[in-house]
Each structure stands twice: as C-alpha cells, then as structure tokens.
Image 1: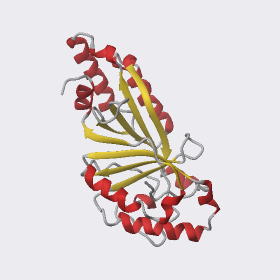
Image 2: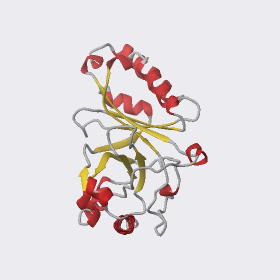
Image 3: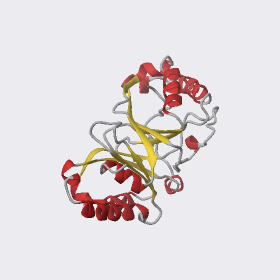
Length: 247
C-alpha cells in the first residue's frame, strides 16, 4: 500500500509553525486482570476514564475508536490532536493516572506533525488536507491507521519525477472522495517517516482504494507500511465498555 507521502520536511517559518498540529495515535491494551474485578469497581473506573477523555486539555481534540476483535494486541485507540505537544502529554498523564490506567499497556504509539504537502501545486485534494498544517477529523465511521516509510531511493529521484508519481496517486484518490486522508510527518519525532490515517464510510471502499494504488509507480518505493489498524469510531464509553467485555 502506497500513498501520497511527501519528502522530509523543509524549514518552515514561525507563522507556518503556529498553524501546525501534532497528531498522536495511542493504541491501548486492557489487561485481563481488570475484567476479573467486581462490576462496581469496573463501572466506576470506566466512568472516570471517560470523563478524562471528555475533558481534555484546552485546545486538544480527542476521538476514540474500538478495535475489539479486530486486532490481537489492542482494543482501543485514542486519537488526539493539539497545537502543543505538552497538551498531548498532559492528556495521557491524566489517563494513566486513573484506576483503569493502572491496567493499560500502550501497545502501539505514533506521533506526527501536520504540514503542507509539497506535491499539491497542480493537484487539489477535495478536503484540502495537503494545503495546511492543521488536522481536523471528519468523524466518519471508520479510521485506518498505519506507519509509512519510503525507500531511500525515492529521495534520490528528482522532485519533478516524484511529483509526477504523486500526481498519479492523487488522481486515484479522487475516485474515492469519501475517503479522507490525514498525514502526520514523523521525521525526527518518532521512529517512522509518516503516520497515515484514512477516514471512510466502509472498510470495503478503503480496500478498493488500496487495491487501485497497488500498481502505481510510486508503490515500488514503499519500504514499510505495517502494522495496519482498522478502527471503528465510538464514543468514549462504548469504547471502554467493549474493551471491558460489556457490549
């Protein structure tokens, strides 16, 4: 699976930085020991955790997703977006400080920063995501998340050659206007180069988009695109109830 993945970030102005958002995808695993406690303790613990999610630090957006039955080693995703990395830290400290937080393992963790795409001079995304460093959810039913790394050979190509190949990607993507991309740039911030997320109405529709991208020329320069997460959007309380075995 390859996607519109741009070059490593260039230096941007202070004005640009003020319009950039950090994106954080935290996948939690709830240990079985939690589910062996009494129902009253668990109900109170779920409500405490949900309250922390409902009232994040100022300026922070939070979305929650369930992966119960969809991935072996994680049941919950907390997607947070904030202009300051300190706000993301504060949110997670609040969550870990709850009763339920003592039974959570962070199965996967990805950090990225929004920035403008360098390849959009001649191609416009319908959502405008590539033209801004801001990131905002569309609140569609499904979110598909995965890290992404390009082969080093990609960066040895000329900019025009890379932009031509990315143009092919954009044209394929425009066939699926209800699939919305969120690109987080992770160079120097995390282990990956990009953390990619796609919102959509249907897993089948996203599968067709990925299948259409497979033959593209740019796909030959993909080095890593796993693990992949299929996440179903829920409110905080449903996410916690499903993880706790209470559908």
